[in-house]
Each structure stands twice: as structure tokens, then as C-alpha cells.
Image (cartoon, rainbow over all chains, first blue to last red; front, top):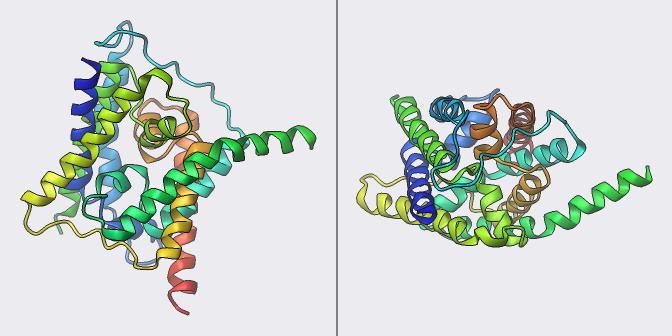
Length: 143
Length: 141
């Protein structure tokens, strides 16, 4: 049951990324190019994705997940250094090439060598992240 | 220009996928979390459902690409050095900041989660600054 739901969700997500044009790095960089030839497509994708999810969050009230367990608790509204620094690093990498994790995986079969190199480098970065995050916390404790 | 119609339609599909993953499995559909948990070993027992999600995420666009004409071009830069730096930054940043466009953006904003909203504003701002620098400095060299 859990596997079937995960397969369907991953497939539908991949189809949505493909259909929306978000595996095209030019459209993503075009959205981020606010001072150039701005391409608003990504805003429509984000808006379109938020609508069903907003309904889904409403439906989680007084229910449990179909496959059992509990829904994730809403995190405390704490804006820490990790969140901000992580978002800055992510945004910089996103702007450089126009790929974020979802589209980089969705397009790996047709993104050529560049797409594969990106995915490999991203996986390496994810592997190094716990060490980097620990170092951030240690520096903060010493400061 | 009908790009925004495809964008909106594809976006609705992405949102339905996230809604299915949440209501079905009780999980946040955040790609950096799903993949990152497998990489750093924090996934523990949930590795199978993560693997299934990722396998379908690769397979379905591959099939769509085979069946579509014209196919989607990724327009990815040919500068492999730039790609490596970008990939490292995306991998590090999404795991340090605990989310990417799907987790913070789609799932966080739709819940009016302050962390998701702020992270999304910050990574869009950082991305916009990077694109300005890229367009004016690096490509101009």
C-alpha cells in the first residue's frame, strides 16, 4: 500500500514537472531573471501546486493517513541560521544552472551528461551536508 | 504563449501528487528530504517507499519524453564546472536548510508554515541575484 502510493505520487509528480516545463532549465532561469526577459511560468506551476495541497492540509484535520501513522506536526515558526544559510546556498546553485532536486531527478534520463553530473554533484553535496551542518552548530556554540 | 497553461496544469498535477503522498502515507513530498534521507542514512526503515517514489519520478518523465513530439529540451549549460558547483550547492543547501522547492515551496507555503514561506523567499532572492550576476558577469566575459 505505502509503496503503491509512493509510486503513484512519484510518477504524478514527474509527469507534472515534465508537462509544466520545469525540467527546462531555461524556463527556471527565466523566472529568476526578474530584471531581464522574465518568464512567469514557474509562478503558475507553484500556484497550481499549492492549491490542491492547501485542500489536502485542511483534510488532515481529525483524520489519519490512509496507510496508517500520523500526519507530520507543523514545525515551530523558528527561523534559524541553518534555514536561512541553506536557502541561500540552494538558491545560488538553483540560479547557476536552473535545476532543483525534483527536476534534476525527473530529467536525468534526457538531460545528457550535464544532467547526470548535476545529480552526482547534488548527491555528493547531500552526503556532505550533515558534516557541514554540525560545523555550523559548533561555530555557533563557540561564538 | 500558452506556457502558463501547461505550467498551471502541470502544477496542479504536482500538487495532487503531494496531496496523495500526504493523505496516503502521511509524508511531506519534499524531494531533497526523500533523496537526502537515503544518502545520509537518516531514512531508516522508510527506504523502500522513498526508492519507489524516486524510481517513478525518473521513469514517468522518461516515458513521456519517448512519447512526446517535440521532446522537452533541458537547455542545460555545457559548462561542466558550473554544473558541479551548482549541484554541490543545491545538495548542501537543501539538506542544511531542510527543504527545496517541493518541501518548503509546495508543501510549506500551502500550510502557511513560516519556515517554508521564508525559505522560499530567500532561495528565490538568492537565485535571482545569481542569475543577474551570471548574465552580466560570467556570460559577458
